[in-house]
Figure 1: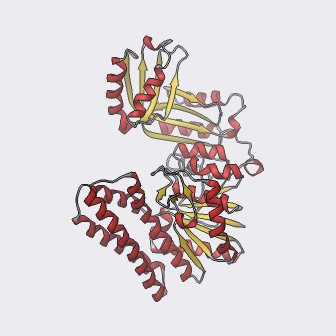
Figure 2: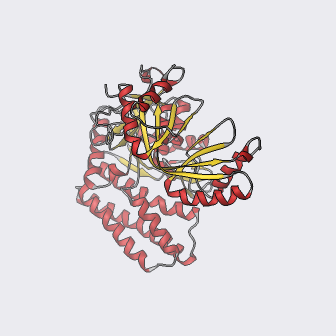
Figure 3: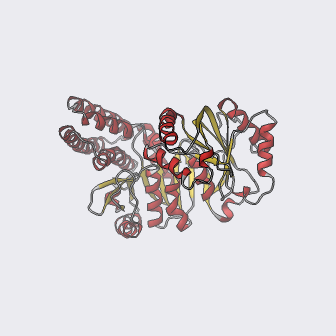
Length: 467
């Protein structure tokens, strides 16, 4: 098989873990697979980079040297464990120092200019992946494997200039990846490529936004026409529910692309829907696997026979840290654009609406937002809506949870909603809000936060998901 393997931050956060990654790659090479590796930055390095950039924007130049020193020490300590060959160890440290010196110049520039643009932020964020890719590639060499590391830009991933969340230009990208990466694979050289990073047509660094490293893996998978993309994480796959809530939760053997997208949106350890787009078009399967339990085959995300199952409901997610806002007003009835104005007001203030429900009477609308944004949303809505005579009353329920019940076979299956709501009612739990999309892959509803875990448990039991 030809496989793209993506390793996340937890998989490469220490020297021991990077050696484990190298062992996994070596084992797959030995049985005849062709492997392309994609890596994220180590642990929380990405967060550290952006925090430092924001600090120096305010003129804290004296902090730069201290940060650079700590960053080098952290990566040098990892190299000391991950690489045994002394010459290779020192060569890798020298390369790491060169990369970090380049970062120092950029941070100093931000400090003097006093401005951190999206374009500059992308440059700063790229260093985490650049450092981890170099170390992983060197560790593969230490395992007597031929390897070469690339940034996403060097690999040939070209995007538009939407810094922070760039979109790949797939035709141009595919052409360049085939030219630059395919010949290495044919020679049994393992390419190690930075996740998350690309470049626009002028060669300026861009990043791919949320799920960026997964996105890099699927872009490469499509361009190189691989058999599968493997996303290595710290769990055995995608589960029927959170095992912290349901001890009997099971790993799902297979999911459709649509199911996986729904689950990712609701916080399951699946791929971001954006990252799934390339492989859906080319029908390339994606497998979620555990880097600490490589014998487990994980969860396969695909379409067709591979994911056919009899289960109506496959998984249940619980989303906490959310609040519900209710807007009521007779003035909204028959007033075109009243809902649009609500969404526009929140959107302009960067408040994301996670869920919406409204009555056909048009007299009220309920929305779910992140709890951290509740106070700001309430004040904005009261001032804007009441001032425009769009609503008579704006109220909130601060402590609520969203339950999302998912499964492709829910579509066209009679009585699913009835079974869900009956099982919840048997636990004396009141449902405050309901929403279902036309895809019928997902039924979401809102309960008091104190009832969330019990609601998940009752549905899990009703559909025998532990068996």
